[in-house]
Image (cartoon, rainbow, N blue to C red; front, top):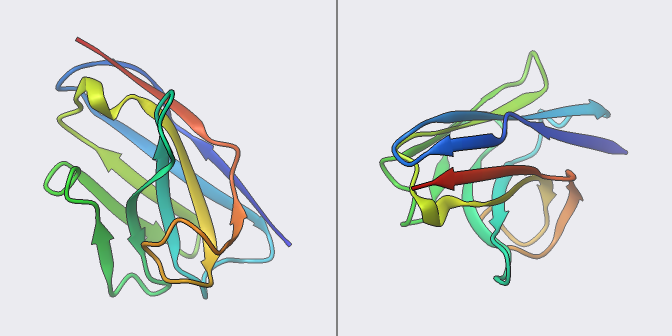
Length: 123
């Protein structure tokens, strides 16, 4: 079993930055890809970014390329999402997930999810 806990969300003005963290406990997730997803009110959950277990391959949604950076520190069992140049449309609950069964950019098939952290961007 793996437990994932997201943190780092908050209220920020447009153009601001945050660093989201996804910390794992229980069994280490260092051998698995980790993904970040988000869900805005009234919308479906969508893929944001993912990183393979060694960090050798990184994926981003087109909407966040150049603004968001995903990284991981396997010694700390933590994956980070640096979110810069935030826009109001980035407002959402951000979730991390691990152990993908259908590929690191696919919404379905992840073995474990965190509870989410709220990011609110004001204009």
